[in-house]
Image (cartoon, rainbow, N blue to C red; front, side, top):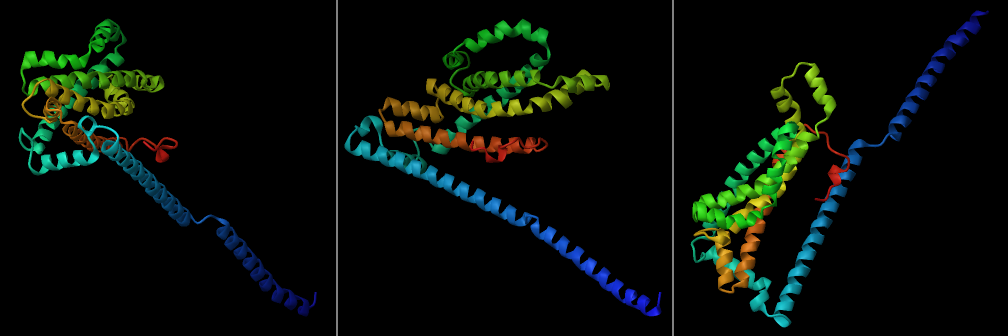
Length: 313
């Protein structure tokens, strides 16, 4: 081959490499441009969530306005406000309670008394329900022995026990806490019992093969597995705790929101009854929010379930 041919080939080869490199770079750029922009997708999803949340709250506000407006109009022109009251009268009663006070002292004192009764009874009832529920859930023999007694106790109208507790413990704090404990206990007990029974048997068998003791199995497998069941019952149980405290006060007390409602009923003050109900509802919603935060913190280890982010309740 001549020298000139070699020179021509040497001159062409860099151009060929350069062309190939340019082609490869162009293909990579096309591939990168074809991939979705993750940051843009995240911004779009966040904006969609904000729009959905804003629309949801707007619809909720509209429902409240329509409900209160229709109630106010009906009480003004069609129904007797003495029996059914109306939103404007309820707002006046709430303003009087928070500005001037009630016949039994500051409304904040009444709220504090009811909360004290509810929280103490809730704590005692929840602890007792979790402990007995998990123990009976893991001991089938003991559960079979105690099953008739638990079913009989659950069948007793627990609200009626408030009067009995007043006879036993008087009008003070103890009778209200006892009523709350009875209401909360069964709400938590059955969920803890079911959660302890639903533990994956493969996990239990593997732990026993590895030499885990009964206490280790209970603390590291059974309780974490039953946590979701227990926490879900606590949301309902705190509502029962407020009901128990109010019912106990309604039956006989010297302080509390239940006493305000009972006094309003005795004086035919329908606005006072609604005002007490609204305060109890707000307290329950705040407690629900606190329990939800605690549940999210305790269950951070759990992977999110499918569709959990879009859950509406």
